[in-house]
Image (tube, rainbow, N blue to C red; front, side, top):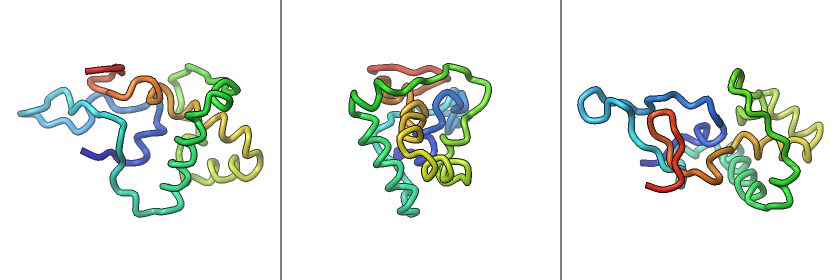
Length: 121
């Protein structure tokens, strides 16, 4: 099924058992990051689609310096937050590079299940 747009930018901070059902999917449902649901907020959706498109360019991704810390989700990864909006306006280039980090590892590994990322089924 389609995923909430925020799940695309939560990087390593996804719950281990997303959409768990105690009977059929006790470990959660495997998620494939190919489509989004609940995209009624056009501004947030447009921002996510723009980031996805720009971060697919090697020239942009190669400039990103991503931390692998899993302690805190950077405020810029929360699309629509005041901190994210300020970062986008203050320095668009630095914002884009940070947002590319927020997408990892979804660019290379599209499947998430049980707290792990997979490149194929």
